[in-house]
Image (cartoon, rainbow, N blue to C red):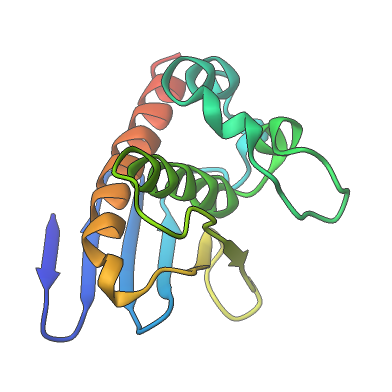
Length: 158
């Protein structure tokens, strides 16, 4: 199910593996995502590295600010699913902007969670995306949802 409501800028998307709510504000997008998988960390996805190398190899070039100061090429293989979703989304936004020669190629995101308050597997992602770029964000979310679903299907097929 995908619901798009332009009046209140709330976008809902539901897949077998996660549920996503998006609220677009003037200068940022707020994504609340809840993974419905039995795990919440990418280390549980044995096919992840091969899938990303095949489907989105440019993601391994990302800058990432994490506790261990690891490059994203290493962080991606042992990170929370919300953080992985954030980087995939950022890569698709960046690709669209670069391809269409949009200004502002730097896209930043922050993923947070508090499983003492929210259910395990729930994340909040904040992306520096203006309301003028909402169509880019929607397109990137659709691509990200497709890739994340593919990743999970590959994993659960094994």
